[in-house]
Length: 319
Image: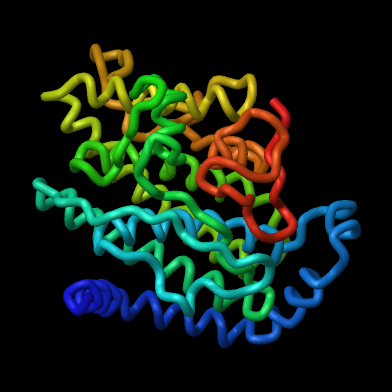
C-alpha cells in the first residue's frame, strides 16, 4: 500500500502546474457550484422535460471518469480510488474491482501510470467544479470473471466463447484491449457533449478534458497498432471491439478499428479515427450509455454500470 501511495504521489507531483491551473479555474468560478447545486436539486420530472444543464453534462462526464479512473488505478497501482473521491448526490455504489497488471513492457507500464494519474485528476477536477452538486460514484464493474462486464464486452466482440472469461489485467495486450473499449468512447462522448454546455468556461474545461482523452486514445491505438505488426491477431481483436461498439450505438458505421487503410501511397495506419473531413466524430449521451451499458436498447443500467449512472442523464438510446 505504501508503494502504491508513493507512485500516486509521484504522479500527481509531476502535474503541479496542471493543478495550479485548476485552482485558478475554481477561484474564477467559485459561485457556479451553488447554481449547479440548485439545478440538480430540481425535480426529476422537470429535469427530464428540459434540456440538460451544464451540471447535468459535467456529472455525466464524472460518471465516465469514475469508470476510467477505477480501471486504470487498479491496472497501474492495484487499488481503486480513495474513499473521499466517491461521495456525492445519488446512490453511492461499490466497485467490483480489478487487479494490478504484471506488465512486461516497461513502456506500457509507464503509459498506464500516466493515464491512471490523469483520470484520477479528472475525477478531482470535476468533483471540485461541481461542488455539492457532484454525483457520487455509482456501482462499477471492472472485475474479472465469466459474468463480468469485460467478459460480456469481449464475448459480444467474438474474442471469447460463451462462458469464457476475458481478463484485462492478465497481460499487457489484454490491458490495452480493455483500455481500447473505453478510450475512443470518452473522446466521442466529450465531443458530443460540447454543444450541450452553455457556460464558456465550462466548455473550455471540457475541451481540455477532451484533448487529454484524445491523447490517451492515441497512445492506446498506437501501441496496439505497433504490437499488431508482429501479432496481427491483436489488431483483429481491436477491430472486433470497434465493430461491437458500432453495433450498440446505432445504425451508422462511424467507429473505426486500427487495421491499415488504403492511401494514395499504398497503405496507412489508422491511429486517429476521423470522418471524411478529418474530424473526430461525436456520440450522444444515449449512444455512450449504449456502449458502457452493453445494450442497444433504451435502458437505465447494465454492463460496466450494474445499477446505472448517477445524475439526470442516465438512459441509453433505443437503436
